[in-house]
Image (tube, rainbow, N blue to C red; front, side):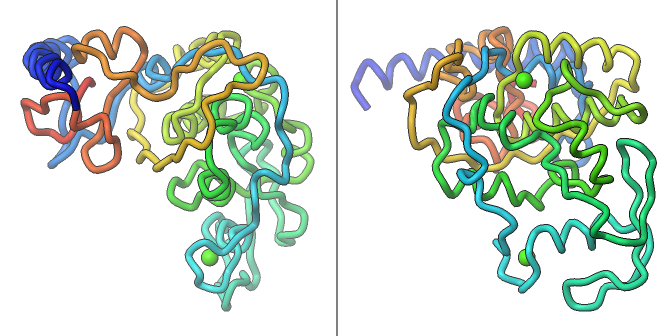
Length: 279
Ligand SMILES: [Ca+2]
Ligand SMILES: [Ca+2]
């Protein structure tokens, strides 16, 4: 780091501290236990970068699935069916006498082959809204994400096919729309994906009529492989370019940053030591 870099970092740290105090009092972020875990979903929505989306480059084969990333012998589809069952016993990687209910349309089945495993934020939507910059390993982890319950769900094949690759400005389920909107922004937040302006508007409209609380999703580590944006991308946002203050970062739509998961956490001062900065 250059001398001037050290100097300007110092001044940023000082102002960041002030901003954290201001942000904490402005938004009344309440820490639960050692770390704040809940927030207003509108804050999560507003933290997502807004950008036009990629219009080229996507191919399903770029997202390897269903894999067995934890090497327990069961692939991701089998693991989701195990997690999502409402009844049934697990035998090896299979569910015996299982039953599943599709959150999109309420359809239930006792035959798992009737259900699809839905990438909640579809692979193409993920690509278009930021996954284009990821390396192969990150894309594979995204396509097989078992680290956040909303990332992959078992739903009726017909509802999954009706949804296709569409976002909430283009498709919504007939029921559970609050849950849908929260899960959608949860996955986008977890993976640092952007929203386009129509999508954001649609989500804001739904969330205005929902309970104003949701768990802050755990961030997934992402690795960038390219910065050459495909056509259609209008903003390179997605990673905090390091603001002088938390206030500036929040204003630009970034944060909150969580200790242990966001590298940006170390850039700012966690004065109240709740494990979250720029909240
Ligand atoms: Ca596995
Ligand atoms: Ca979109």
